[in-house]
Length: 433
Length: 162
Image (cartoon, chains in turn blue, green):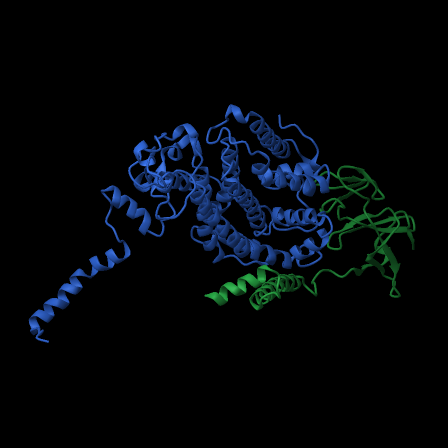
């Protein structure tokens, strides 16, 4: 080997390694510069961990603000805000019946930004319940749960229930009057479940009465069990969006391409050639999405179109949460008094419809009717199978389904309004006017 | 190659099931069984064997502390003690609907949570409560104090005479 370096060239070599190191590190992390070509835009989506859940190209219909209203994204971003603020709050919270309430007062008095973080956490939770519900309404009224998206609707209903459980287990933790009586009533409702009701209640409480064991159990559910289930289901929900061919869209929004030039079809044994062209590198994807060649279509590159739309919704969501948290303090009732429930003892607004139903019959209002409602929601895409009116708001072809679901929504909202404004002491009917 | 084909053929015609199939079946059953055992043991684990709740049997003081005409709620014990003349009763103040604590008034009991109402003896007069407030057994301990046993429900109207 006649390869020898002088001292100076060795020094130079080391210097150039050091000089090039930032660029080398950068390019090893980010494989591409900001893209200026279509190839680059594709690679950006493909090679970035956080972007690769996006398709390379996205249909223009998906980006119409008034089609989705960004409700799914808002739900996700609220969940992320809840995770971050929740982890921060855990640094100061103690799940103990003697300390929990004092810790709430500490957040207010002696922790920097403590009350503000609690406000953000509480208002984001309220917002998430609303956003997830409205997202469900959007998906229904645009007929987006139909084949091939049936199972993603089922996952979505599951996510809605998880959201409710998370918010329920969450507002118990301050151990104020609302917490104590909500846990009392909530677990009593569970006790009305058929066959295993009392066992379920005992497992939830860890005791025969509401106390320290119950607080600890709901804490573990709130900070570990339910969030893990939530993250897992969100991941599957998003994965299915891609695998089910992106968001739903009306048939008319796709450009119809003449399938094949006749001379190619004329070749014997090559009939399926054009069909095969749709099998891209990712394997078989339902819907006319993965394409080879430059077929004209109505899609645009995710980078930057989809990303900018997402960024816009993110900023809007954060701004909304910050604004509400700045102007309104999260409610904190008096410390637990096991002798006297507040009168009237009201749950947060999204459970007041349930509370109103429970005030007629504990079993039917708390277990029977909600269970039937949830079951029907789960089975909606398997009842309503007609491939009509997909991807259109309030399609006339779906008048019956939309009317039924609209009635369901209105009835629940009316129950919530009654529970909120028309119930006074001892849950007696009062007029707010 | 030919051996493999032979093996496949024998299973198809219903010859003795192949070793591979039996092992696969046993493995599946084993894993499935383990999963069930795991779920069951976890349920057993989270079901507490001992609880820290209040005792079911407790003393509430001597009868003199409850003069005739008393209708008083004992908060922590979740009972109302009632005395009319020399007759006494201990009635639960836990609403039979969803477990809130009912308020005690001279006219009866009222629940602030969902509006259940009971008369003076705990019978339902309105609201969603499915049944009357239970009466608990009262007894006089040798030291002269009244004892309530919440594990023993008695018939409504069965007064304890002091």
